[in-house]
Length: 119
Image (cartoon, rainbow, N blue to C red; front, top):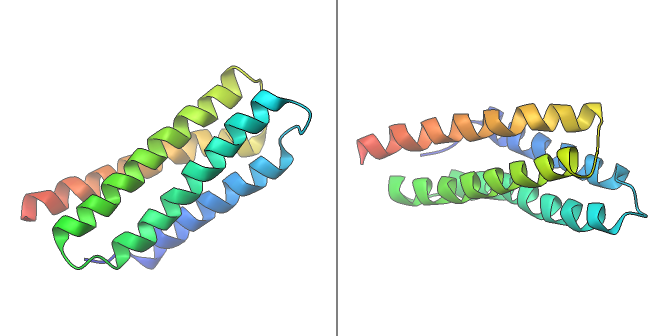
């Protein structure tokens, strides 16, 4: 099973948006930099797992890769919420990511559920 180019592109755009957010984070606030680094790692892993899933040799492997994507996306949502709520990082980019992350989670959850029904 392969992911559509649209979904691969969406996860790559997601990772790029997080990179841009990270670059714009305040450099003088250590807590923001630490959480930002965690976000950077987990969000870029979302795109990496999407690429890996596209090369899966079986439906079981495909679901396994997407399970990893979902774990990283959920972790990314945590870091975004902490930056937004506890560190007062407020921006249009943050708002976009707080909407996009749950959408990505919902899309890939549905894909995994439908694929598992076929297995």
